[in-house]
Image 1 (cartoon, rainbow, N blue to C red):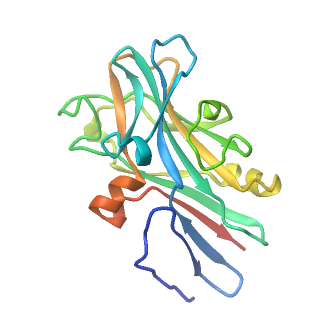
Image 2 (image 1 turned 135 degrees about the vertical axis):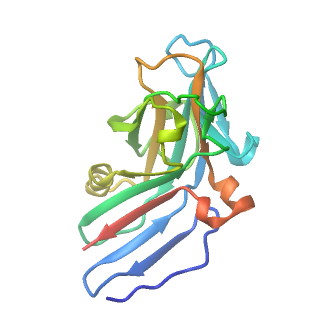
Image 3 (image 1 turned 90 degrees about the vertical axis):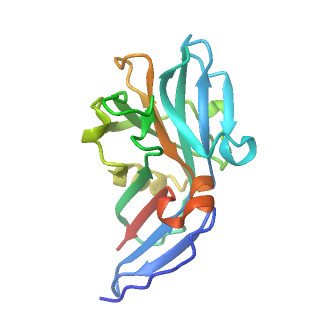
Amino acid sequence: MLKIFSALFAFGFVFTVPLSAATAETKTAPETDGCLIDTDSDGIVDKVIAVRTDGEAREAISGKLWKQNRKAVFEFKLPEVDKPVKKATLKLFLNGKFGCHPDKEGASGPETDLYYYLSPEADGKIELVDDNGVKLGAALPGKPVESVRKAITIDVTGAVQEAAAAKSPWIGFRLEAAPSAADGTGWRWRTAEFAEANGKQFCPTLTVVTE
């Protein structure tokens, strides 16, 4: 089995690792990331923050905070694949000492769901229309931060397979507090901007394995 490792983890990177004669693994950083915000909690998002252009502390927050509902968004350019998608994972990292707001021992982040959406809404830009798509499942439970790993890996195989079948050039992932989640807490997600400044090992990454 051949494995090739690259030191290049720049913003929007794409590189492919041949795992065997028949299998290849492609890792991609988000083209853009940021937040959709429902500023008055009326159920309609009305504000967009793109981390790269608006500079929100290099993190995206998901949760019901400050009388708002914030949703963290990551959009990826999908690699061109000519073989079936065998597996796909989304790896994200929590920011801060405990990964949540308030960032303190004993705090509990909200139960959080993961959604995905395809082109044309997914297009490499954070926009209000990105508040749509299909619920993939739970991303994080509403548990004290001490019991949650700061590196989160989520199986997104079904979403990427659907994108490949639809020939969607982009895919977006959105993290938001579950409807039943309590107010007052949020998860803090590291962005590609954070990784550029603090180390490639913290970069949000979409990994796609084809066969």
